[in-house]
Amino acid sequence: MDLNKVMLIGRSTNNLQVKMIESTRTSVVNFTIVTNRKFKNKEGNMMEDAEYHRCVAYGKGAEVLGKYLTKGKKTYIEGRLRTRKRQDSEGAERFFTEVIVDSFIFLESTKEGEIEGATMAEAEELLYGEIPF
Image (cartoon, rainbow, N blue to C red):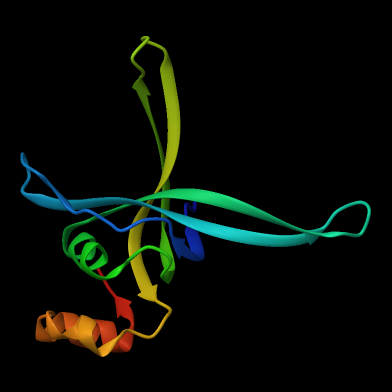
């Protein structure tokens, strides 16, 4: 059996914008999560390194993320890796890897005002944290 599983805890680098895939009428959101790692270098000095992870979510998950995940907000993302290729403007093939989001949990407490505009189901999901797909 093979396994393709990614689990990240990090912060959103921007406010999200949900788009619609017209051919399938499916919501999609692309976003980036940054994770930080602290370590000691050879000289014993504490260093920090940031890693940026491209993520994409579809359907209801995309809509909820787009509505409530704002820049700097900490979240747990779970999904799988997908690598795609595309041609750049000069015709060269470029490969990129992204996390296809299966589920997520908002890790910071949700402000009361954020729930006001939510449907009952979304409010429950926000209060309890986990959004199943």
